[in-house]
Length: 400
Ligand code: NAD
Ligand code: ZN
Image (cartoon, rainbow, N blue to C red; front, side, top):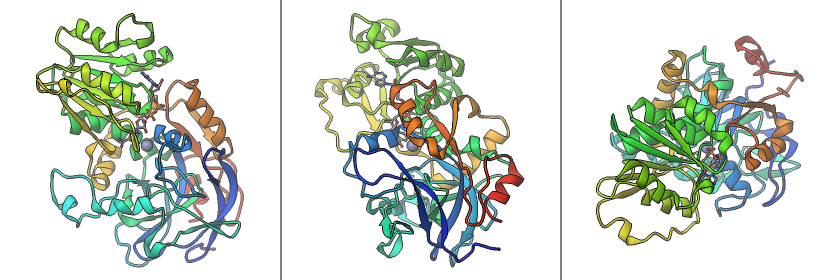
């Protein structure tokens, strides 16, 4: 029995208001409207950005809301006029869309599709939500809302990927990996032989390290206040790691001493105004580039103008500067061709019921690496099945 055109009842993690834990609820997911796609989420990561949302450090959210923006799944059905994906396709969700038609999409050096603005309203086209819970509409988040077994997303926020791709791995291409890797490759444009420093060694920071290494950096210095992060950072390419709390001098002075003239590329992957200043001050005075990857919405920076006088620059990045739809499909192909490795970024696999546990693991830094994967337990519209496995089982779970 096809679910196309019908409301699907499934489970989702709802945030009813600021400051409360997620609550696992049954939700109704409406069929996709024109140019929308309904997706069975198979795996979704928990990103540092969700932690920021939970800490309520942004005015960005509307409540109740379904968070989640880093996922992979299978298309369950498509709305009218959808031409680029079909039922059964494996896809990655994209918080940054690529419509392919706006001035930004048509500009080869611009990656910020103008259609992304929809994400701030938390509503889909027509100013409505596709989710309801206990009779109330529930807001969408970041164009994606992946902490639900099914979600509805605009076609322009969905990238079709290799049918053989393991969704529980490649979901990291949906945010953490691509953001970090792209920050090094696209935004900073790290050069061969250069010296880099990465502040914050969560899943995104480790991906920056992989990007710096791929770009040929000679020296990559990892910086984190949690020394448990160092081993993996070194495995992935860090040449040395420093805990600022072990130092007598400020980290920027130590990095100057270590490198002689400051690092050429520095990345802030924490989302903290103080570490942004330290990262910028760690850069080479004449040509050092500091990239802010950490989320700093609704935060003012207080940075001395003198840091810029001699030529340093400071820039930001969203999603690592990739044009989202075309690049994520290619990054998944690169994973399949073993050109990139996502596997070391995954240390925990939990199901949706454990989402609050996952948040605690992430907040306390007790997990080794940031991105935690939720394998859906598949409360499909018709049957309850437990666990998630390879291709054919996932297809069965998607009800297709
Ligand atoms: P994470 O929490 O796993 O990693 C953060 C790391 O920073 C941790 O290892 C923590 O120990 C370390 N840290 C905290 N305070 C520190 C300090 N004062 N000095 C040194 N290290 C410190 O998070 P993540 O998932 O890796 O995400 C990192 C940041 O990237 C977050 O701010 C997230 O919102 C942001 N982000 C931005 C984008 C984007 O498009 N720009 C995309 C994804 C994530
Ligand atoms: Zn993210």
